[in-house]
Length: 244
Picture: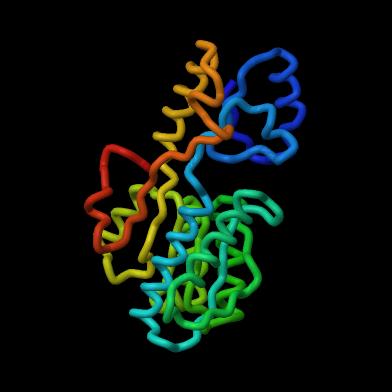
């Protein structure tokens, strides 16, 4: 069984059923809770903490170029309040930004939640941007929400003044940086879903063949390699035949 859980604890009945049937469980993209994770054969994803930290650091460097030493105001746009993926990515971008010496002093507004959908992200982003016309930086934790995020900033009249770092590696966003290198989006961190899917299938096959977790998925997790694109190198990563 290969499972991509939306809720790390809400899938407990499904995980219990798979375990009682003695089927190997491979989890991909989104993780299980700490209580359920021991029941999985392998968790396949990008190292979200490390990827988000790299995104945060890249935006910090872009902020130095754009804002100098002027203090900046930022907001993180995530999926759901209390959700593990949102929290890990949120903490990562904040830590990454903080790690860059000389980055402008940053004040974070309360996190906004777009339920990983563009239409759901539009209103909260528009509201906070309208209330804070001095908003400088947006960390958008999924490219899927980006159209709504950008529309919200546009409605508030500040899109062209804002620096955006996004997460997922959608080819449409990579192409945007190629076409508009001075635009608001200055970094996009990939999570390589094709690579995750292929690796998850490989892990399932290995489990069925009787290979041990220690041999093919030591520690119960396997991180796939990802890329982080900026306007300077986006053309290196762009592939028109892919959506991610």
